[in-house]
Length: 411
Image 1 (cartoon, rainbow, N blue to C red):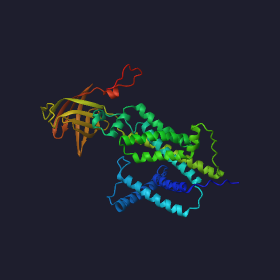
Image 2 (spheres, rainbow, N blue to C red):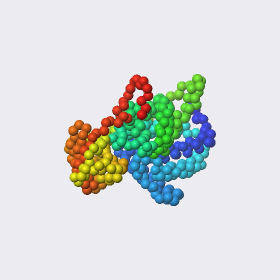
Image 3 (cartoon, rainbow, N blue to C red):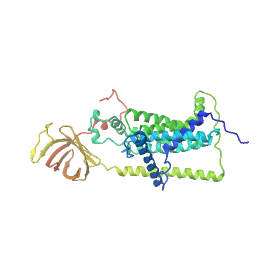
Image 4 (cartoon, rainbow, N blue to C red):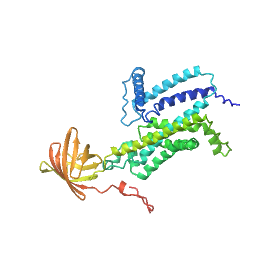
């Protein structure tokens, strides 16, 4: 005899309907874009979202239409208006659903399906961010430009990025702490362990995002709520076990017909395979995007500065003379005498530096003998001959690790 599911309370049914609709609206268009050949459908969904957000901003809020272009920020005006629109749609949908389906006793099967979708979505995000740390994509090694910047001039987010980038070992540790829960979430028997680990990891991430003003506050909170939702159905069993009470073993998953079981496995393999393919492409593209280190990588202190045949003394009021030339991957930074830093994209080979200054290309020739550099070329209308010396590696990157410290080395 088939066992009838327990009847949920009215409040639980309404809460589930609202939460279900919010989650669907937030994770859509997943898994579109993940599976090969679905990029156009994914783009179409984003276009529909953009139309809805623009309409909400103009008609309901009476503000200018926000742009969907985020430049790496997930906390833009567009995202907050989208969150408001999701709330409006979820409330309206919950009201309609509650009226049309008021006789339903529970949503046990739909809740189980929703948990599975949340597991895969959360796993994909954790694997994405985790491998971005493992392969030094999110937090790269500190550039000479960053090392030459005063701590007080850093933004809170810049400080966090510098802290993470200064230790490759800790960055990789943080990455694996996201990768492991992501892998555990892909399988039913380990999903609870994955959800609990994800709660711990994401709580720390959310705190860092809020404490250091990282513009991924909304999304990190969203992922934390999903991890809690995945663990919530077994929360009382976990509490009982933690208090020393005996808990029963979870019942086996209800099996479907052999045909539907094969379909389920095919869908699972397609999604996991798409994740592997997407993560591989993400890592390859990110590595190709980063230019290789240049032969002049480092911070160069100006020793002699000749402009138009005249030696320029190191006066703080001189707008032409340089204090330093800082060479990083793909660009150079000129620290002027007034301590202003000017960044220029640059391509560097064995003998020349090609600097892009707006629409103007400048070609400087150089010769280097060990830690001394002589640079010649035209810059901002002046013919320059600059002699520079490479600064020693900063303490932050040269100190290294020590097992024995007879006293704290805190500088």
